Image (cartoon, rainbow, N blue to C red; front, side):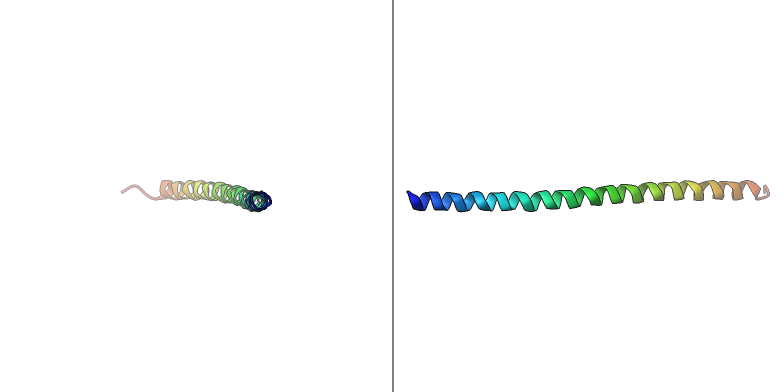
Amino acid sequence: MDEQLGGLEQKVEQVIALCAELRTENHRLRDRVVSLEDEKQDLVERMSEARTRLETLLDRLPAE
């Protein structure tokens, strides 16, 4: 009986450790998602600005 409880205790400790690892990884991944979303928004803004500049340049070209 004590052996079974010891084995169960060990398994519970492993589950607790795994949960802590997963919680840490989840936090890290959430931070990464926020970072990537910020980067994406920056790129979207830069693309929009580039598009506007190109459209302005195209408007200045003489008609054929």
